[in-house]
Image (cartoon, rainbow, N blue to C red):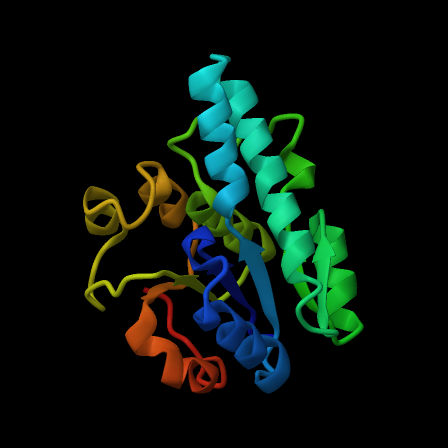
Length: 199
């Protein structure tokens, strides 16, 4: 079974584009997908509280994981096929039921040896980690900006399109990686019906 992990950028929160994308993914796409929600405004709130009441980045990272969980729960209310799941077993069960799982990182909340607990590891890196763990064929990062189609993970990190640790997690992933900005929206549903080749 070909599987695609789709990370939804937190910057899309509250936009009409997000609603259109969710309808495409949940209502029109039949290919097996796993969504990963960014932290969005909840992660921004963690940054603000940390600035006002300083605490270490380990705690900030774990609160940012909670932010991803909250956004996943909210997105799961946007379409009946969507369901929030907190571990890989939940992903598998949801796919078997014909649901579209939105993974949130509850399984990482207590720490994980593969994950650096820092602001430099964002939901982009976590989506790449999950894609490798699930043996996915493709990772698609839905962003609010377009990126050159041939950009390497290192180039994306240098341009601040993804976080600084993303190239390390991308190197563990054997499938293809695509950044999908607004110009890709019309072709997104068709993309998932096309077999992908590892990059």
